[in-house]
Image (cartoon, rainbow, N blue to C red):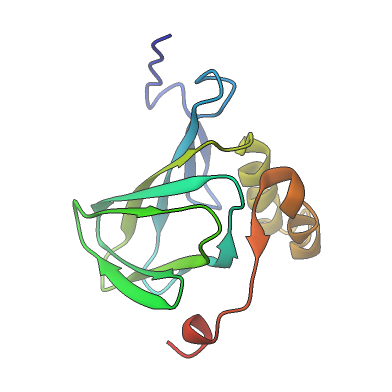
Amino acid sequence: MTIHISTASAEHLPTAGITLLADVADTNGHLTSHRSTFTPGTEGAPPHLHQHAGELFYVLSGTLRVLTGETLTTLQINDFLFVPPNTPHAFEALGPTPAEVLFVLTQAKPRFGYYRLLESAYQGRSTWSDVAATSTHYDNHYVESPVWLNR
Protein backbone atom coordinates (compact mmCIF):
# COMPACT_ATOMS: atom_id res chain seq x y z
CA MET A 1 0.00 0.00 0.00
CA THR A 2 1.34 3.40 -0.98
CA ILE A 3 0.26 6.48 0.93
CA HIS A 4 0.73 10.15 0.14
CA ILE A 5 0.00 12.88 2.67
CA SER A 6 0.12 16.41 1.29
CA THR A 7 0.87 19.36 3.54
CA ALA A 8 -2.65 20.62 2.88
CA SER A 9 -4.26 17.38 4.05
CA ALA A 10 -2.00 16.80 7.09
CA GLU A 11 -3.37 17.63 10.53
CA HIS A 12 -1.57 20.60 12.09
CA LEU A 13 -1.35 21.10 15.86
CA PRO A 14 -0.09 24.70 15.96
CA THR A 15 0.35 25.16 19.72
CA ALA A 16 2.51 22.04 19.97
CA GLY A 17 4.25 22.76 16.65
CA ILE A 18 3.40 19.29 15.32
CA THR A 19 2.19 18.20 11.88
CA LEU A 20 0.73 14.69 11.86
CA LEU A 21 1.78 12.82 8.72
CA ALA A 22 0.93 9.10 8.99
CA ASP A 23 -0.12 6.89 11.88
CA VAL A 24 0.05 3.10 12.16
CA ALA A 25 -3.47 2.71 10.73
CA ASP A 26 -2.31 4.60 7.61
CA THR A 27 0.79 2.41 7.16
CA ASN A 28 -0.73 -1.00 7.90
CA GLY A 29 1.02 -1.10 11.27
CA HIS A 30 4.52 -0.33 10.01
CA LEU A 31 5.21 3.15 11.38
CA THR A 32 3.97 6.50 12.56
CA SER A 33 5.46 9.81 11.43
CA HIS A 34 5.17 13.49 12.25
CA ARG A 35 7.10 16.71 11.75
CA SER A 36 7.79 19.07 14.64
CA THR A 37 9.09 22.61 14.86
CA PHE A 38 10.78 23.75 18.07
CA THR A 39 11.54 27.38 18.89
CA PRO A 40 15.10 28.10 20.05
CA GLY A 41 15.67 27.02 23.64
CA THR A 42 12.49 24.95 23.74
CA GLU A 43 12.54 21.43 25.14
CA GLY A 44 10.86 19.15 22.64
CA ALA A 45 10.45 16.25 25.05
CA PRO A 46 11.72 15.45 28.52
CA PRO A 47 13.57 12.16 29.07
CA HIS A 48 11.42 9.21 28.07
CA LEU A 49 11.66 5.87 26.32
CA HIS A 50 9.55 3.66 24.12
CA GLN A 51 9.48 -0.01 25.12
CA HIS A 52 8.40 -1.22 21.68
CA ALA A 53 9.21 1.51 19.17
CA GLY A 54 12.46 2.66 17.66
CA GLU A 55 12.56 6.38 16.83
CA LEU A 56 14.23 8.03 13.85
CA PHE A 57 15.16 11.74 13.92
CA TYR A 58 15.96 13.63 10.71
CA VAL A 59 16.79 17.33 11.12
CA LEU A 60 15.24 19.41 8.33
CA SER A 61 16.50 22.76 9.67
CA GLY A 62 18.11 24.24 12.75
CA THR A 63 20.00 22.45 15.52
CA LEU A 64 18.75 19.86 17.99
CA ARG A 65 20.43 18.62 21.17
CA VAL A 66 19.48 15.00 21.87
CA LEU A 67 20.01 12.79 24.88
CA THR A 68 20.44 9.11 24.00
CA GLY A 69 21.04 6.96 27.04
CA GLU A 70 23.76 8.86 28.94
CA THR A 71 25.11 10.77 25.92
CA LEU A 72 24.30 14.26 24.65
CA THR A 73 24.58 14.69 20.89
CA THR A 74 24.06 17.76 18.72
CA LEU A 75 22.25 17.23 15.43
CA GLN A 76 22.51 19.70 12.55
CA ILE A 77 20.55 20.05 9.33
CA ASN A 78 20.40 16.75 7.38
CA ASP A 79 21.65 14.71 10.36
CA PHE A 80 19.98 11.35 11.03
CA LEU A 81 19.71 9.59 14.39
CA PHE A 82 18.04 6.31 15.30
CA VAL A 83 17.13 5.60 18.94
CA PRO A 84 16.38 1.91 19.60
CA PRO A 85 13.58 0.73 21.90
CA ASN A 86 14.17 1.02 25.65
CA THR A 87 16.73 3.82 25.22
CA PRO A 88 16.05 6.96 27.27
CA HIS A 89 16.08 10.05 25.10
CA ALA A 90 15.11 13.72 25.18
CA PHE A 91 15.61 16.65 22.84
CA GLU A 92 15.59 20.44 22.61
CA ALA A 93 16.22 23.13 20.02
CA LEU A 94 19.56 24.94 20.18
CA GLY A 95 20.80 28.05 18.44
CA PRO A 96 19.14 31.17 17.10
CA THR A 97 16.69 29.54 14.67
CA PRO A 98 13.86 27.03 15.07
CA ALA A 99 14.65 23.34 14.66
CA GLU A 100 12.38 21.40 12.33
CA VAL A 101 12.59 17.63 12.67
CA LEU A 102 10.98 14.68 10.90
CA PHE A 103 10.23 11.82 13.30
CA VAL A 104 9.44 8.23 12.35
CA LEU A 105 8.62 5.58 14.95
CA THR A 106 8.81 1.94 13.89
CA GLN A 107 6.86 -0.89 15.50
CA ALA A 108 4.87 1.85 17.19
CA LYS A 109 1.47 1.98 18.77
CA PRO A 110 -0.97 4.53 17.31
CA ARG A 111 0.42 7.92 18.41
CA PHE A 112 -1.75 10.68 16.97
CA GLY A 113 -3.99 10.67 20.06
CA TYR A 114 -0.88 11.34 22.16
CA TYR A 115 0.08 14.37 20.06
CA ARG A 116 -3.48 15.70 20.22
CA LEU A 117 -3.32 15.33 24.02
CA LEU A 118 -0.03 17.28 24.03
CA GLU A 119 -1.72 20.04 22.04
CA SER A 120 -4.52 20.09 24.61
CA ALA A 121 -2.01 20.28 27.50
CA TYR A 122 -0.12 23.15 25.83
CA GLN A 123 -3.44 24.98 25.49
CA GLY A 124 -4.33 24.33 29.15
CA ARG A 125 -7.36 22.17 28.29
CA SER A 126 -5.79 19.07 29.86
CA THR A 127 -3.02 18.54 32.40
CA TRP A 128 0.48 17.11 32.20
CA SER A 129 -0.75 14.44 34.62
CA ASP A 130 -3.26 13.45 31.93
CA VAL A 131 -0.35 13.09 29.49
CA ALA A 132 1.71 11.02 31.96
CA ALA A 133 -1.26 8.72 32.61
CA THR A 134 -1.18 7.57 28.97
CA SER A 135 2.36 6.13 29.11
CA THR A 136 1.36 2.50 28.54
CA HIS A 137 -1.33 3.30 25.98
CA TYR A 138 1.05 5.32 23.77
CA ASP A 139 4.34 3.59 24.76
CA ASN A 140 5.80 6.86 26.00
CA HIS A 141 7.39 6.24 29.42
CA TYR A 142 8.92 9.23 31.23
CA VAL A 143 12.22 8.59 33.05
CA GLU A 144 14.73 10.50 35.17
CA SER A 145 18.05 11.55 33.64
CA PRO A 146 20.78 13.30 35.66
CA VAL A 147 22.66 13.92 32.40
CA TRP A 148 19.69 15.80 30.93
CA LEU A 149 18.97 17.62 34.17
CA ASN A 150 22.58 18.88 34.39
CA ARG A 151 23.10 19.75 30.71
